[in-house]
Amino acid sequence: MAWIWASLAFVALIFLLQWLSTKNKRLPPGPRGFPIFGSLHLLGKFPHRALHQLAQKYGPIMHLRLGLVPTIVVSSPEAAELFLKTHDLVFAGRPPHEAARYISYGQKGMAFAQYGSYWRNMRKMCTVELLSSLKITSFRPMRMEELDLLIKYIQEAAQERVAVDLSAKVSSLSADMSCRMVFGKKYLDEDLDERGFKSVMQEVMHLSAAPHLGDYIPQIAAVDLQGLTKRMKSISKVLDVFLDKIIDEHVQYQEKGKNKDFVDVMLSFMKSEENEYLVDQGCMKATMLDMLVGSMDTSATVIDWAFSELIKNPRVMEKLQKELEEVVGKQRMVEESDLERLEYLDMVVKETLRLHPAGPLMIPHEATEDCVVNDFHIPKKSHVIINVWAIGRDPKAWTDAEKFYPERFVGSDIDVRGRDFQLIPFGTGRRSCPGMQLGLTVVRLVLAQLVHCFDWELPNGILPSEVDMTEEFGLVLCRSKHLVAIPTYRLNK
Image 1 (cartoon, rainbow, N blue to C red):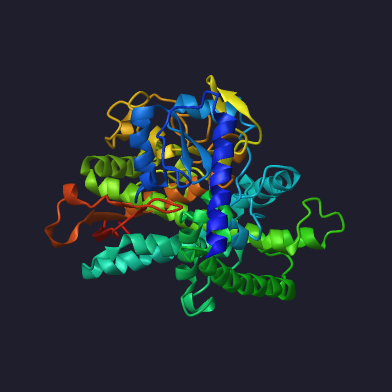
Image 2 (cartoon, rainbow, N blue to C red):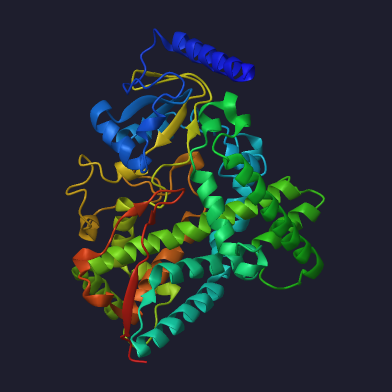
């Protein structure tokens, strides 16, 4: 019992020292919070919405304590530009993260790695070797092959007038594409352990997003009050065995002349005498997980939201189908080479990413030194959370911000690639998502194919206006209920 009181006294001392160090400095406005726990209680079930509501009161640059951690929440395009462009080097750090400690091999994955020479090496390897335009193009036949399998399945359902669980099917498609790209083959549920491959990956996503008290009150991390650390250790052991097995298979069966998957590419660097990227086994496994998690759920989630909005808004669906008929025709399916000519499709995807960014809150940045932003003092080690969801609904940046209206992009040069701060679903600057081009390609291709090949109606007489758009918060912001619809094949062959 004595150690509990000693721990509480130590935490209280830390809190007091923090308060004294910032007492005479102008912090951004924000809620006062409670001693030790700060404003953790305000986050609720949907932190992106709760923080958005608080920003309405305190402003687009808001300070609050989450546990003992000073946290800055950024909720407008102008404020985001200050942190991600004007002072981007200061805020390029990543805070310690309990989940990444176990699931990302001690924060060796690029998403959670500290900014520095190691991170720069990993970033260069990912952008130049794994996610270059040439590499993405090399996997085009694989993407079409997997998508063809889905279309054939839906065609059979259309013949029988059977409803299709689109959320589940798109999720499986995204997982299969990701596995073939990263590992060179698809994996069945039973290939990982009794929980199943997809279930384990969902657990990884859940644990990565779950608020861990140890991240906010580090002094009690070892106690594991929520039991999250125990679950992280368990899942990391399962993943470690699985990833080692994949690497061993690649070492034994490397084929010359075939299109190399990501594991092959990284193995070639490990074997090289120069090894310019300094790849070791831990770094390799962390990168494999980064690539898998980063491509699996994000693309599937965006497609799910986009299709839900299309079914909810029949006018937009019909307009997109008309564009596809004019550009592609009804004699064949969409090919990747068609995508650059589908302007309205591009607007639909932008509007989906504005209203439903896959990551509603960016992975927190960390201030590497004291900094003054917009006359506010930002202490060193502060966590900085960019509320992408709030920025996409900022009424100062968007007319009728809550309305799904792709036509808002007609004649606009606003892009999603990080140049325009009112639309940053992939982040921007040093910490932007390196898989952006791959993600956009997959989202546009799958969405175009589903809209072009089929007409859709909701089962049981449900009206388009009744589509349930409830969210489920996590590392990615999914729909809480699966989208189920009845297809009718519409092409001429």
